[in-house]
Length: 622
Image 1 (tube, rainbow, N blue to C red):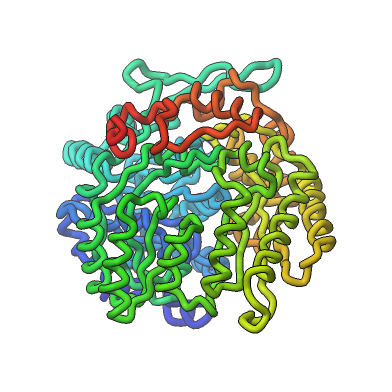
Image 2: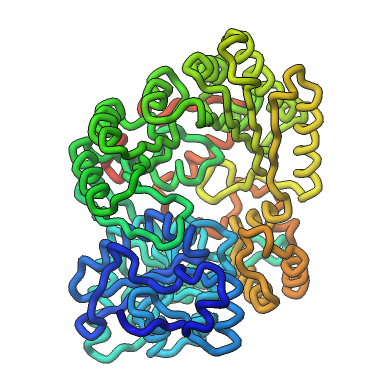
């Protein structure tokens, strides 16, 4: 391996220096002189989080399968190293080659959550790349972003050259081929961007003009400045999951990652239609892998990594059509080899509990429910599709199976929520605790049952039926948490209940970014310059600095967070076609206001628009 970018004296000063040395098992090694394209794949958060991200692993593997491309990894340096790099003018580098990424052809970043936006600027700043796209020259890297937040890239429009909207397996080959053509004939940045704008799923923010109404500040028009640039960007979707690229040699981190296990993606999308869930809408239609492909991938992944745990990746694993067959294979083949099986995203029913009892140490583990709302009315509003009978029945089955720890996840601040709906959260938890004491004989109990309630605060997201909903001020969120906490203390089984809730300031800021427009860019830039980055980490989040940046740039939190949108308002992301139509989202908004449940996609087609893709559950239903 070539000389490290960081000298020994710096490595000795910083926390977890193994984050920055590269050379992990299964990392790709190429000679940079032998490739035409060098691609820095960046995750704008700390190494342990980024190494757990499946999307980066898929793109890393896919791009490196090209002989003409070398894809290397970059993660946000932790603040201790950030400060030293600034002091000593050490440019940000890629882990594999330890070369400065300013000399690469592409800097790509995934936008997994809104609170990483200042980390995008951190990466560009440390790399020595101009923070705003308008200031970049022909020899600067092309900055491209993708991921879930790319469904509304407007708050970072000034900082990026390209936005990839959708799943990366479809259009990246076209983009890289185009880049090679332009590089071979003498690279001109503007000519390349103009040509790239015609590739499906590629959005070039600089080629679009936005005007705003003087009366209320809402968008008046959003249109391209050139006739040959598309007015609508179609989100890219993989139609055939079996033939899509998937890594069978996952990288093994030197530092323990957030998810230190093999990940087996069994499907994309979800049939359930929860109205708050962006992933459930933008990843439509639900598309499954065949069980034979999954068995082969599981064997290869375990053989190539030596991991002792394999996890199924899915929005709702219980809905996979051959889950029973797949689990029999994993239990027979994996558990016999001493490999644990992790099962997230299961609906708690007799089948799921039977499977979990085979793969978990029941006495040590907890069972997790995500009802999201305490009252039946609110669960109907959000289209959760769970009744109190489902929840109590599932918990009772778990108690009979030997579990005595239950985790509940709820949201506060949902549209139409009342104090009675909030109080229903601890009341439901109390009923579950009562079911334990009614179900498990005293002599068989392992002490009290433990019911842990966790609430997050609802943030409206683009391309969901709740994208028009207002948010609340931070103090109101805390009031709602207090309603839950006070009601919990009034429950008969309060000693079996525990309550955790999230910070409210960061929720408001997330809401501003989630539905923001490009007028936010100067405030994000000023916030970064004042020291804001790693905003998703509580110890580094400084809301006062954000408030100062908003005030300097005349940004109204009321306008972006607390205002209910009109159903006919032009939204900042309306130029993107996610295949779920606005008419469908409006119908679902109205159904929510009437607490009307919409059946899931396997029960009946609800005409969301995703059928036009012609794959997955939509194709199978025809």
